[in-house]
Length: 212
Image (cartoon, rainbow, N blue to C red):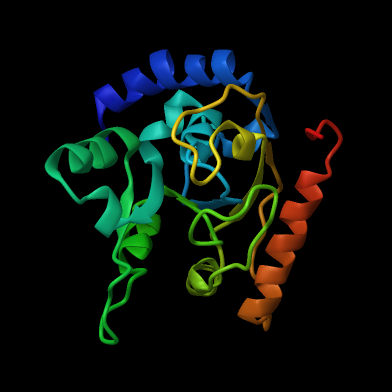
């Protein structure tokens, strides 16, 4: 997808806002400067997680970035649909699929088109500072596309800006630590791969410079 308005907002609104309001620090930013396809995963504790992740990408890549998000929530009215698809660039995920449909088919199409998916493997927002259980979707995509890198990201401070249940943001310094890409190994099971992803994210959490 390509949207000049999305590029404009990313360069002149989102990135400056995240730098000034949240003092956003991106560690390992060079890992996000890639053409794709790729899968970027992050912990999910805040309403601002997606905005912080998008701000971490270089503007030159932003039109290749597709946050995976629930269709029933982000497409529930015309205005939100326009903003979510044209500005945020979401890839809608149908959480109400039936047994004869594949909820990841759209993700596969995006990866085949060379796009970069942003996913939260915990599914929904969890408790501040707690890394919840991972859903199987990331592992299933990794098994289908073993040559596509999965990049772990740890978001620090976002849970203090706008945790679940809070209506107004509270400016707090944030950090996005990007790890090296991981690939599923031959013979590795989905649970084993998810354990490696989880360990990698925990390692990023304790990287020097992490917020207390």
